[in-house]
Image (cartoon, rainbow, N blue to C red):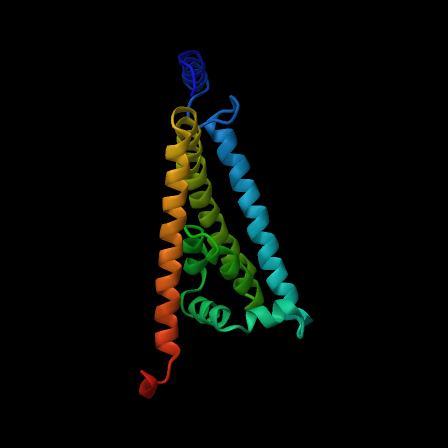
Length: 181
């Protein structure tokens, strides 16, 4: 159980540095670093997709892109193009597949860069505000009630499992022949 002195020191530290900072760095610096990190990672994923398209046929990555989920994402990119790249930055997991598919489909580099720029702006904003606040909330919850944090993590994991289970069941039902049901 944390002592009042520990909590007071943590509150004083948060007050001195602010919630949306990292060890005293101002928000804009944390935001700029997050922007650069996601831009470099997304660009590397796009370039990997370009490399696969250029002649890496028969490899595991090419086989992965031939899978049904990847094909569905490729079709969406054909339909929605650059806006799909920008919106993908609001997701977890899909973002990587979308950037890889954009490179694999050889989306024009200029259009991709514009979509990438706006997507990175959104991603950095979300993770430097909501993400930082969630980390601070988890730290505070751990300091005050470690069992409550464990319960919150277990609840979140259970909800993710439930959602994935329902989604898989729906996908199986869609893939099943019409007469088999």
